[in-house]
Image 1 (cartoon, each protein chain N blue to C red):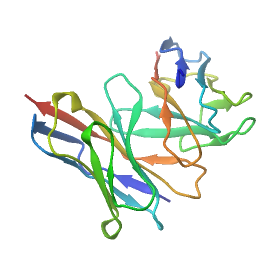
Image 2 (cartoon, each protein chain N blue to C red; image 1 turned 45 degrees about the vertical axis):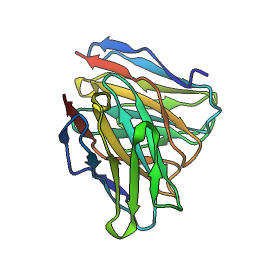
Image 3 (spheres, chains in turn green, brown; image 1 turned 30 degrees about the horizontal axis):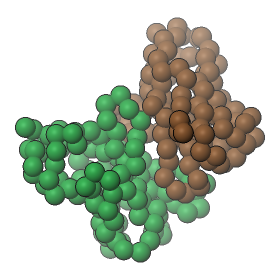
Image 4 (tube, chains in turn purple, orange; image 1 turned 90 degrees about the vertical axis):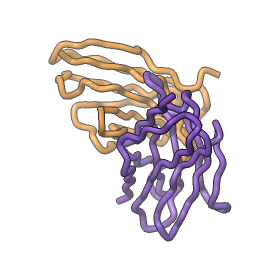
Length: 114
Length: 111
C-alpha cells in the first residue's frame, strides 16, 4: 500500500527566509505526486504536481518541488517566504492503479515570523 | 464556474440524529470523494465514487453511507451520529488520477 510521510509537523521561518518542506512516499513504482496548501477555514488548493519528465516542477505562488526517485522524496521549496504563505501544506500521492485515490501526508503547518 | 460546493457549511447534531451532506461539482468530473479531517491526522478517505451510480469504501467508511445518483452530486449520510464523527468534512472531485478540487468544507459537531 502507498504511504506518505511528512516528517515535520510544524515549521517556523522568518519572512524572507527560504523554505523546504519534506515529503517521503512509499510505493513500488513512481506515483503521481502533489502538493496542496490549506489556509485556515478553507479547502485544499493545488500548488503543483509531478507526473513524469523534468524532476523539478514549478507551481503557483513561487513554489517548486523536486522529485528524487532514489530518495522517494518530493520536497517543496520556496526561495523567499511571505507572511501570506502561513498555512498547512499537504503532500499527496496517487498510484496509477488506485482509482485516482490520493493518500495524503499528515500535513506540515508553516508559521511565518515577521 | 462554482467548482465544488458543499452544503451546509456548519451543523450541530445531537447523538443519534441523522443528516446528509451535499456535494456538487460543475466540472464534469467522473471521480468524487468524501474525506474527514481531524487535527494531526491529515485527510482520511471515507467513501469515493468513480462514476454516476457507483460508490466504494475508503479508509474510514464505518458509520457513513453515500450515494451518487447524478454525476454532479455526491451525498454523504450519517444515519446515527456519534461524537466521534465530530470533524471537518471535505468533498473533492477529479479527472481520474489528476489533481483533486476541494470544496470549502463542512464543520460538523456531534454533542
